[in-house]
Length: 182
Image (cartoon, rainbow, N blue to C red; front, side, top):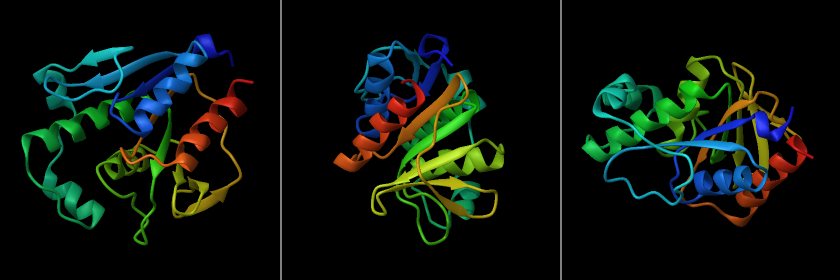
């Protein structure tokens, strides 16, 4: 697969999303960064400001997400828009790559966790780099299996994750792109 045939779907936020975008741009991969009015974006390349109607397409009940994720989320307009924009990332990507932390209940920490859960619901290939475990994991449909290093195999993929990106997370993103587009 050629880099110039690919599109990264992300969210332009600081941390993992910005790092995915940086890696994509350095290889000539197109980006679509879903955002919304008033969001603080770290990247400007490929910005796609979602309209109110488009945000509504990704609307999800916070009660449902809280139950699915085994934790409570604050019902604020900003957080709802973040979840709605993550929906667009995952909906458009055919493989999902996340940087964060896998919790004991098999969910991923933070708002990023909704993207991982939505990928599970959609039965999309899902890989998470757990910064605490310093390794990649693949969702098998039942559990997280250790993975030696995924390779991007679909031209439309999503990259998202924590705003609190560590050095090992940034290195994992770069290594993913090196393996995939050498």
